Amino acid sequence: KDHLLKPRNIGHMAEPDGVGEVTGTECGDMMTVYIRVGGGRITDIRFKTFGCWAAIGAASLLTETARGMTVEEAERLSIVDFEGDLAGIPSDKEHCVELGMLALRRAIENYRFRST
Ligand code: FES
Image (cartoon, rainbow, N blue to C red; front, side, top):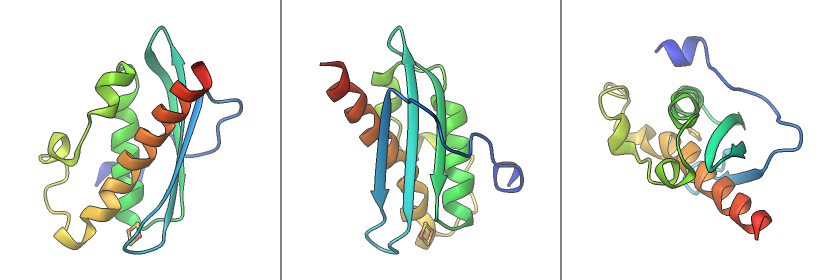
């Protein structure tokens, strides 16, 4: 609820190391995640979305959690890791919660592609 009322890390990032964008297959809403990486860790992360309240709150929580993680740790994040924090979110909003995670994985893929 706190992340929904005061979302963190919203907005565009200039010159990110990786960008991931996804469109929800169930609702058509979009999510973009930007990452900056240093020493194999996510040093900065931001998101933009046209998604609903659940997507915004979950992406805020996700970005706060992923900051400081290694890219390998961050790409393994799943909805299971946030079960306690997301208690009360209706099951029909799970796809909204996963939107940020999918965009983060794409951003990591994009970072790896740019790094090779
Ligand atoms: Fe599309 Fe929630 S309904 S992100």
